[in-house]
Amino acid sequence: MNEILCDRYQILHPLGSGGFGETFLAVDLHSPTQRKVVVKALKSVNHNTSSEIIEKLFLKEAQVLEELGQNCPQIPTLYAYFCQDDKYYLVQEYIEGKNLSQSGILSSDRCLTILTSLLDTLKYVHSKNIIHRDIKPENIIIRASDGLPVLIDFGAVKETMGSFNTSSGSTVSSVVIGTRGFIAPEQSMGRTVFSTDLFALGLTMIYSLTGKYPIELPSNNLTGELEWQNLVANLHPSLARVLEKAIKMEISNRYLTAEAMQEDLYLSQFQTVAVVPPKGENIKTSNINIEKNTDPIPVVQPPVSQPIYPEPEINTSSNSYPKQNDKSSSNILIILLILILALLGSLVGFFIIQNINQTQQKIAEIEQEKERIKSQLSEENLNKEREELEALKQEVEQQRLEAERLYQKAKEEDRNKEKISNTTGSFDSGSQNISAIVFDPPSNIRTTPNGEIICSVNAVTSITINTYGSANGWYVTDFCGRNGYIHHSQIHFENTVHVEKNPSCLVTNIKTGQLAVRKSPGGESLAGLNNDDVVQYIRGDFPWYYIRVIEGSNRSLNGRTGWVNANYLECA
Image (cartoon, rainbow, N blue to C red):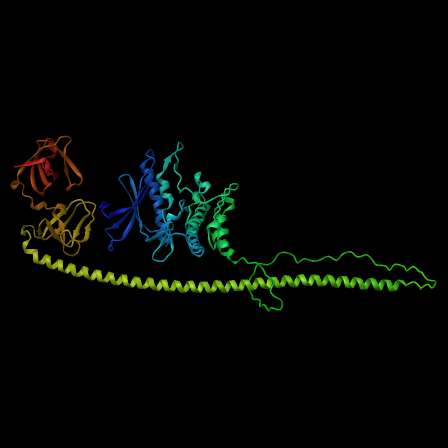
């Protein structure tokens, strides 16, 4: 495809299409590096809605995307947005890399990294009171340059394309944005909250772990919940628990904010089970904050004991023994009570010591976990430094290549200057140092005929430039600050027209309507001619002639000049 939008963006090939329009890969012709961009061509799906309202809503949402892209490196930059021929265009940064649907099944560790990074992005987006509305594997690209996930294709602009006016005069959307399987229940009813994005993000992460879309996963016949965990090998329990909560059908059972989901994901990695250490093992304690055990220490209540009295002995013999007195009975009771209290104290002490040992074991395990995380972070920092060093090397290489390109370009310009100086003698001497008017800017000025563009004449109305000779239909000008070429079809020399020397022509072959007299070849229409009107040919190359009206059926046109299609003229 060679279509050029806004005289700047040359379409290379389509990237996709949908109900709201198409997406293309294009080249920015005005960029010094000819950078690649993504062009989204959107169209309204409700033709009864005023185009002014649609355009106003579109520009508002585009400004929001522009702010998001400028302040968050994991959202594409919006370069431009404009309206043309009832279509609405977004020009965005082209992200090189694969989306999650192209990346295959990912490990739990990789999913944890991606999920944590995306939650940071959503925290920023939600802080601006913006909801993405269409999170899915295809809309998350793993950027090739740094491996970070980039969130693309926000649904708010597409929702604008479905807007219509209600009987009360307000504007609402008639379409539900989202993708089947990833839409939260409230979104299908046209209501979205921050938790809607977290619901879709959870299902997207489950897709990356299993390789299956939500509609492909089995579900519980009673609760309707998806059964996916048995499809994942070496699944982190903390990741599984967080994702399970994120995809609950009821909003109240889900995470309400990205901060809450990210905090739970972090804290759940430190949950451990207390184990009693082996007997005699010395465990060091550290001054760190741990979660206190709020359960009370069990205390065994002593049973209510009854006084024990010795039963009187039955004298079976003829000899009888004297009775024990009350003092000896009291001593026995005291001894028994002391023994019972000592036993209870031992039991209480045993439980207290056991609880202390469990607490110390938990502290030791937390210390070990801290050391493990510290080691992991150190390794990640080292990897990050390596990546930054590699990126710096690539940047230096790119700068070297750019310097080489600029050097070659300068050499080419020097050769072109030499060509211009060598060919000056063959230029039309009658046009030396003459001012010319440029038609319908922007018009491109090139290094050589049909060569690279140096600059463009971008004035809104016609502008006068200096010319210094011509060769083969191309004129030399210094408009760009140095010599360049502009085609003769884009300029007009008012002072070089000699009407009396030019032949007259008759307007013919007009079957319907009128022959348009235009401001420039193929440009804006100024007036219309009819069959048998007489004009005078001034100059031009077939099929466009620059003429002056001599005798028109509309007398008010006599003396007017402009461009007409030569197919409708018979000249003497």
